[in-house]
Length: 468
Image 1 (cartoon, rainbow, N blue to C red):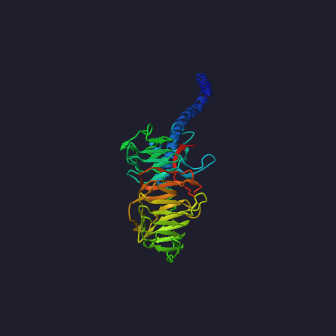
Image 2: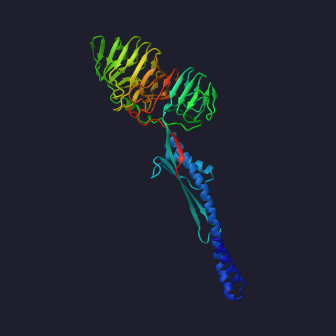
C-alpha cells in the first residue's frame, strides 16, 4: 500500500477524531476496521510473497532432484520421481501438499525436461475479514541435456569398473568413460605408466591412480581430459537394456537344417540360414554364409582361418580364438555398411563367453542397416528365460596388435579384458557396454561415427539445469 496514501488516510482519520460532531465519530467507527483490515492484508500479502519466494527455491530443487532420478534410469512417476521431488522440496522448507511431477515435459523452450508444481495452502490471519486464505503455487522446469556420449559404460555397482593396466594407453579424446560403481577406485590407472586421453570421466564413485583417489579439479598428468572429471555423479543408464532382449536377439536364429558344405580350392564353404555344431568346424580355411547358428561351443584353433560373409551369426556356447587363429570378414565393407553381427546366446540355459588369445586376429565391423544395425558382438543379457546362467563371468577380446572392431560390444553382465581399435576406414564407432573392463594394452575408442555405422540411442552422460 503506497506510503502517501497511508499518511493521507491517517491524517483524515486524525482530523475526524478531533472533530467533536457525532457524525465524525460515526465515520471513524465505520472506517477504522476497514483501515485495519487493509493494513493487515498488506502485511499478510508480504508474508505470502516471502513464502512464494522460498517455495520457488524448493520447486527448483525438486525439479532438479527428479531430473537426476530420470538420468539414473528411474521412470516410476509416483514411487520414484514424485518421492524424490517431495524429499528435495521439504529439505528446502516446503510445507505444502505432495508435489505434482510432469515427466517427460516439453514446451517451446524445453524439449526434454521435468516439471514440478508445488501448492501450499495458506490461511489468512489478520486479513481473514477480507480473504479466508490463498494457495501459493510454484512451478519449476529442469531441462535434461546431453553432456557427452561415453565410449565405455561400465555397469558394476561397487567394484573397480574401469582399470587401465601398466604401460597401457586408452585413447578416446572424442568420448568419455562412465562408471556406475561407488568404489573409491571405480576408474583406476593401475600404474604411473598408465594413461588415458578422454573427453571426460564420470563416475558415481571416485577416480584413482595406483589406488589413491585423485583430485578431479587437478588431475595428475596421466589424465588428459577435455572437461573436468566428475565424481559422485548419478549412474548412467544402459539404453540398450530395453531393446537388446533375448526375444529380439534370437529372432531369425535358424534351428535347422544342418549346414551343408562344399570345397572350393583350399576353402570349405558352408551354406547359410542353417545350423551346424561348432565342434565340426575343423577345416583349416572356412567360409561361413550369413544367418548361421553355431550350436555349442566353437573353438577356432591355432593356424585356422574363418571368414564370415556379411550377416548374422549366433553361437550357443563359448567362442574361442586360440593363438594364431583368424576370424575376419573379407567381404565386409565398413564404408558401404556391409558387416557382421555375432550373438552369444543360450543353449541348455547357459550363455557363452568369448576368449581371444593374445596372438589371434579378430577383424569385424557391424552392419549399418537391418535389425542388428551397429551391433558387432553381443552377449545375450536381458529378459533371459528363468534359470539362465553364464559359462563364465569374464570374457577376453584382444589379439595382436589388438582387435579391430566397429560397432557395439555389449557384455553388460560380464567383466572383460580388452584392447583394440575401430575400423580404419568408414565411420568409426567402437563402444563397450560391460560390467567391468580391464584395458590391458594400447586401445582407441570412438563414438563420433556411430550414427553412420548404424548405431543409435547411444549411452549418454546427461546434465541438468533449471530452465524455467
